[in-house]
Structure formats: C-alpha cells, structure tokens
Length: 344
Ligand code: TLP
Image 1 (cartoon, rainbow, N blue to C red):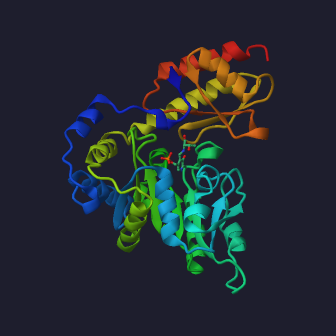
Image 2 (image 1 turned 90 degrees about the vertical axis):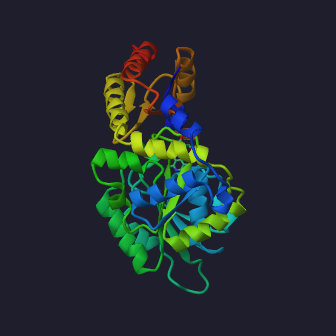
Image 3 (image 1 turned 30 degrees about the horizontal axis):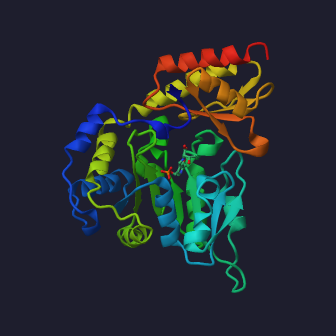
C-alpha cells in the first residue's frame, strides 16, 4: 500500500527502533527519565524557548497550552480551518471553559488587522480575549506557510493588548526546511509552541510543548490532570531525539515529492491541484467521482488518500508525502490517478 492519507502513518525505522530499545529510562512523573529530560532540553534549545514538555499528542499539547494561557469564560481567536477549532472536538470548551472566536483567513491566513478587530474591548459585560492561536504550516489549506512578517504583526497587536499567542507548529520543521529559516526564528515572540514528532519527523508517538519556565511548570500540572503523565516514556522520547538528529533535513525530499505529485496530477483535466508549499497536496475533483468514490477506487489499486472536509467539500482529497513514500510511489500514484480519470 502507498499510504498518502497523512504523515502520521510513518513507521519507526530500524535505526529509530534501536535508539528506542536502548533508551535509558526512569519515572517521568518524578522528572527522573533522563531521555525525556534530554528531549525536552533539546526541544527548548531548538525553539529558543526556556523549557519544554513531552506530551502524548499534538492535541494534548495544544489543549494544555490553551488551559494554561486562558481563564474560563474567555475567548480564543482561531482561524476557521485550524486544527484546534475543527479537529479537536471542541475541547477548549470542555477542558478550559473558553469559546473560540473564529476568524476567516484568506486561504487560511488571517491578518493583524483582523485580529485587532476580533479582540474584545475590555468591558465588564463582554467575554475577554484570552489567547490567539496560529497554525504553521496550516494543514487544512494545503500545508501553507504562515508568512513570518504577518505572524510578527499579529504578535505585536496581541501583545499590545496583553494577549498571549500560541503556535500550533505541528509541522513547523516543514516550514523551517522549506524556507531555510531556523525554527527558533520562526517561533520567536510566541508565548508557546507545540510541535509534533509523530508527523513528518517519523516518530510513532509524541509532541512537545515549549514556552517559558513558568508556563511549562503549569503545563506539567495540566498534562497530569488530563492523564498525560507518562512513566518510562524515555523509549518514546528516544525516537524523538533520534528524529530531531536525523530526520529534519530529509523533509526536503517530502516537499520535492509533493511538488512532483502536484505537477503530475495537475495534468489531469478533471483535477484542480493546489500548488503545495510543503508536504501536503490538496486536489479538487471538478468532474466525475466524489472524493469518497475516488479514494475507494484508488484503495483497490493500492493507494490510500484522504477525502478532505465534509459535506459540500466532499470533492477534495488530501495527499501527504512522508518518510515512507518514495519517488517511485509518487510516480505510480500519478499513473493510477490517470487510469481512474482518463477521459473525464
Ligand atoms: N493532524 C492529523 C489529523 O488530525 C487531521 C493529520 O493527519 O494531519 N495540529 C495540526 C496542525 C495537526 O495537523 C494535527 C494532526 C494536530 C495538531 C494534532 O496532533 P495529534 O494527532 O498528535 O493529536
């Protein structure tokens, strides 16, 4: 099977498994797992933040950040297609007692002016704005890179109002490799950043939340309260350390494969393909099968792709390149799309 549904599907390489098997471990709830501690130190160093916390998933990293930054009854500014708003099961309402204040970006990217207009005036009878969240890359709009200058303007506006800004940087390493800008530079000024080890970096499990020492101290309490205190988690952290040391530059191959895939598919007349900026290709099917139907037919031929969006958006597919798909797999996928769609 050629699995292009997500970069979450990668399996640990033999070298990564070796690093996991050999990891030195301890009880991380006591702060005594040396490998977890090393991963957290390394993540803090890479992001230029004071401290970091290993969490089981990106969702938990985002939600712990929201819980620490906000108070119940506040609003959180989010983009309409963001993961935090769409794919985290309204968890900010469930665990933090806050509601999303949704802004519609231009193809997923909103401006500082839009943020300024969405911040509530500090009147006692209005909900106060507790947090702004950005997502880089922005998954649902095809792995788009949030322009750094725009992000910095948003940071300025939010901070001028005393509002913190969290970055869902699930794929921030893709941004860094695509732009050549170090991660620390991309996240400078944010109050917290979450990045995923279990996406393009190829780990089986795990994300890291980074921020100030004070923020991470509180985040550790919230993680434990949510049931995310892990014990001998060094076996997982070892995979993270291995990935940070060996799997970052190779993301360029995924970006190259995404470009080749997009170029190939864009030759098919009934498809409209969004030019990828990183490792995510969004394909709109203009005529013929729905996304579900085409995905089912491709599956029978050995290729897995993900229908993107629901309802009215059922004519979109998302294809994600990663560690476990080769150039040959990409060329084969293009051929199979042709086989299904020729003549349409
Ligand atoms: N994204 C998954 C799905 O949930 C859509 C994927 O296959 O892309 N932030 C962003 C931007 C994400 O894309 C994801 C996962 C998360 C957070 C959550 O990470 P996990 O799945 O580890 O909770």
